[in-house]
Length: 207
Image (tube, rainbow, N blue to C red; front, side):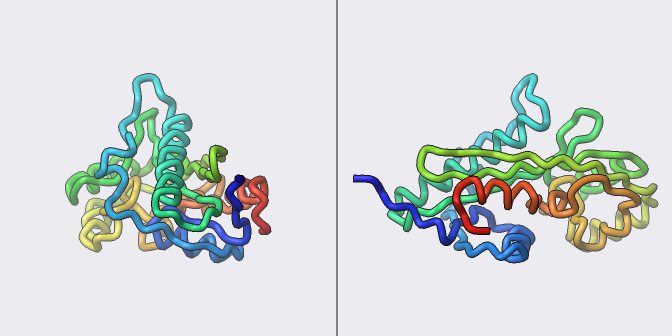
């Protein structure tokens, strides 16, 4: 017998408060899936970049792995079946992927590297429902003004960059560092709304 799918709500597989706010902004009705541990800690998701993998392929692969893991949680916990959404964001500069800093010193090194240069922010959105999984990719170009060492140290001391890809949050104090942005502001925040809405509509979600 076919399992009935509820398309009036979705699950968000993310602890990121910005993603929750952005989903609410476009009127999405959602429930949050809470993992007992982070999937990467459980060995469920390979976030290492594979040899020869482009940044776009990498970020979409990780987003797909996240949403597939979340769908397995829905099935294993016997939750109401409804579409699951996950996202993954990474920074790319000079062909190198930059993730979250490991500590304050690493955050400072990342910010020095971004200072006075262009970099790309790639965010992949993935939706799963049953065996169907689809992704969309948003790519934005961001230009940082030249940062002084005092600016970098003060920003890192605030604690804001320590849990963010590229060691900065565009919605916070780092907004003052950005001289130019070409692309999706919401994509840089972590959930590109155009691609997200497009993908949800493809899954029959009324948005």
